[in-house]
Every structure is written in structure tokens, then in C-alpha cells.
Length: 493
Image 1: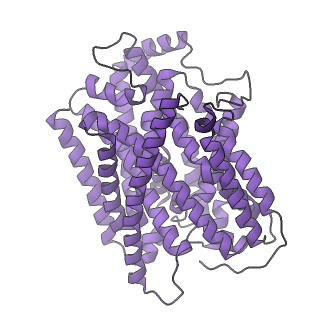
Image 2: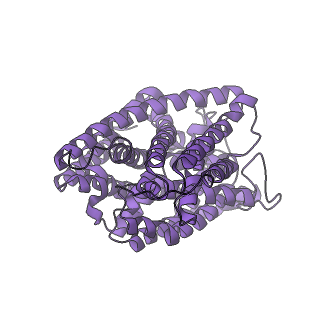
Image 3: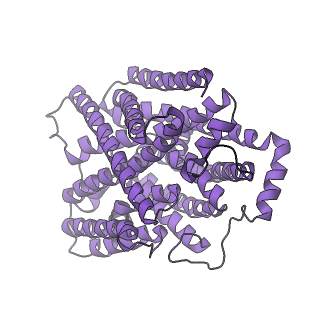
């Protein structure tokens, strides 16, 4: 990279840190750290949602999927939109009416305190794994640019995200993510125009891709597939249940929806992110197809590492400045996923897992404890990313390696199916459930999810596609959570 590219990257990193510090100046209480005083504009929440959802896995993984195959990944967006519309109508307004600080306060109302704490721990573990994968994917790309190892890059990205999240809380996360979402999309658009030589170059790329069936989206035959996620029915099912799990039970996603003034504003932001998902995903699919078009004649440098094809293209084919902008977009994708995960896990820890008795802790003491917890969570995420790098290497050695984007999405299924099952019991039935039955359901669902995630490495092949993992584990969790006698509990947030 040129000196100008490094200036662009450094300037962007400095701007992100400044926004985090500026947001901290406006912080007045722990409530501001946790929920931004429930006064964040809906448009900022929408941009923050988009930035977090479309992580480094999207920036790197989706182009790889199109480069190696076709556009069938877009099928997941249909299931995701359906899931978001259901949640925007039924669940997000419910959370606002209950005025929960975290979504796990809802579980105490529905089951009891043991369920609330168990679900909070499951979320923290699940989000740690999922965000660790995303940090690892970002590090794969940055290692191409920096010449540093993946491990060193993981540590550097993790430390930076921890720094500004620790200071500013959720307000810092949302405003930095709003910026990062804009940079993320702008960088992708610039890359598209560079690949296609402006508007005049779209037609040759699309004609070449269409002739090779690389723009095919819908896979109707077979409609459902057991061992892959290619069938339309399989993809929609997987996208629907994954979205229900992430946007109803994952405080990383839900926390920003609780910062709006009303449940309607939060629901609109969620639905809007579902609609924006289509053009943004198409953008990254076109990037992958465009790189395949450009590489139809092999270049002079090594492109055997498919997982790093996008950063390799940017590094070797783009000019100074534009190259820096693209890597700033990748940086934005990585940071927007990390910062929100750190904030959400830290919030869940101080509110749900290890809360102080009411009146024992002053407001400034809670804020200080939240900041200390954020630091510890940041370092734990770095450890998770390093572990996921090792597991990825094992899958690659055994020949059972999924695409990067599938690796990222499937990692979320380990614990989220169990969480979805007990949340579904709480939402669908008005009468309170049994605390111990819900905890048992969560444990069984999580165990099933872990077995499904590990089974490709254990058996040497994928027997059940990742799109079925959450429906299967959620069904187990829901069935068990419905057992036991109903009890009346009182929630405390």
C-alpha cells in the first residue's frame, strides 16, 4: 500500500476514536451508557443495525461466495426480511412496553430469575463465539495488507474496538456504527465502479457472468436440501429462524432497538434494515462476480487463497486512495461488529449475570463497573477469535471447510437455538412458565446446537446443513420449556 492509503486508514481510525470520545462527553449516567437515554434517532439506529449485521463476514465472505459460485446467497435475505417483519410487529413493541434494560428481563417475567441469568450467560457465550469468527475473518484480510500474521491483526483490531466502546457505551457504538455503515457502503460502491470501469463496464461483467450461470439467485430444484443451504426453501427457512434468534434474543442486536423513543421507531428501523439488506447484499455479490471476471485470465500474483480474494484484488488492482478507502470500509465492517458485541455483553453482565442489589451501587459506580467489564470482554473476544482461527484451520485440514460467510452464520447457531426456544415460549403463551423447565430447555437446546456445529469435524462431512441447526435446537428447547407447572414471578430490571 502507498503512504496515501495509510493516511486514509489512519485518518478514519482517528475519526472513529474521536466520535467515541465525543459521545462520552455527552454521557450523563449509567442509563446513557446502557440505553442512550432512549433518545437515539431511528435513522441512526437503522444505520447502526446495517453496519453491525453486514460485518467483515459480508465484506469478505459474500464476495467469496459469488466468486466461487453464484448469487444464491441472496435467498437468505428473503427469510431474514420475513423474520424482521414478524419481530417488528410482535416483539420489539413488547420489549418497549415492558421497559426492559436487556431482553433477558423479559424472561424473568415469563419464567423466573434462574432463566434470566442462564439466558444471559448463554447469550454472552454465543455472542463471544460469533463475534470471534467475525474478528478472525477481518484479520484474514488485514493480514494481506499489513504483512502481519492473522494473530497479531486480531489483537490490534480487538484493542482498538475495546478502547472507544469502553469510554462511550451504547451511544458511542451507535454513532460510530452509523459512520462506519456509511463508509462501508461507500467503499463497496467505489469498488464496484472500479471493477466495472464505471457504468459502461456493467454490461460485459453481467453478460460474462450470466453465460456462466453465476448470477443465478433462486435454486428451485430441489426446493429443500438436507446437506447444503442451496435450495430456496432451505435458505428461506434458515434465514427466517436465524433472524428470529439474533434479533429477538441477542442483546447485541436488540440493544440498539431499545434506544429509540418508541417501540414503533425501533420496529421501523428493524424492518428498514431488512429491506436495505437486498441492495447491499447484491452489491457485494456483484463485487465477487466482478473479481471473477477480472481474474478470468490469471494475474501474475498468487490468487490460490480464495478466502482472501477480495483484499488481494484491492491490494494489487486498485489505485492509491481508493485502495485505502476500501480497506477503511473493511475496517468499518470489523469495528461495527466488535464494538456492539463488547457493549452488549458488558451490559448483560452488569444487569443480568452479576447485578448489585438495588440501592447498593451508585450511578457512577455502575458506570465504572460497566467500563471495566467492557475491557475484560474485549480481551475475551480476542481470545475467542484466536480459538476460531484454530478451528477454521482444523476444518480446512480435514476438507470440511464451509465458505467464510457460512462459517460466520453457523457459529451463531450453537447457543441461539436454545435461546430462541425459551423466548418463543415466553412470547406465545401469556401464562408464566416454569423456571427450571426453561433452564433445562436452554441447556438441551444449546447442547444440540453444539453437536450440530461440531459434527462436520467429527464425521468428516456435513450431514445436516447449518440452516437447519437453529430450527432443530430451538424445537428441542421450546418443547422442554413448555413442560412443568406454571409459576408466577416478578421481574426486576
